[in-house]
Image (cartoon, helix red, strand yellow):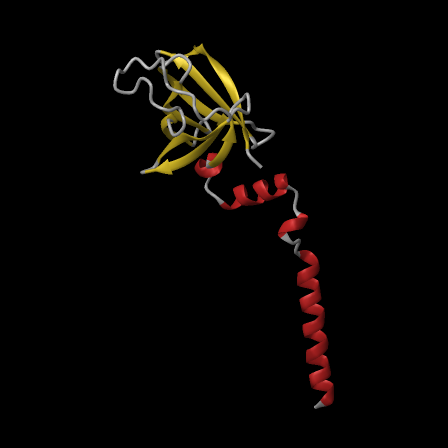
Length: 165
């Protein structure tokens, strides 16, 4: 009886220590490993969800999903008093930039591995432009945001958003 309980105890000890040695605590993962590990468990379309820095790091944009489409809302501004002074719509002109949906109505295109059919708002011009979003193939912490004129992707500008860590 002693031999059996000793053997069971030894097996439990070895298996517990083997499993714990294979696992890293969350604190031991680098931020890149945590993002990579998290993105491995989520749908490819949802990889852009979360907080992103604007190119100048003067705003944080939260990308979220609503009814199957993707949107991006300004949730932090270096200067929270900025107003949307160039909006062509008189009802929206003068509203705070904080809280504006900068990105609207994107759908994931699994063939192209990008988010398309959306619009990006340029607050400094007060205009919406056609847009698509694409994660950097080498670094999923970089998001290319391309705005363009009248469905002509080649007539536009690309900005790079960086994931907030």
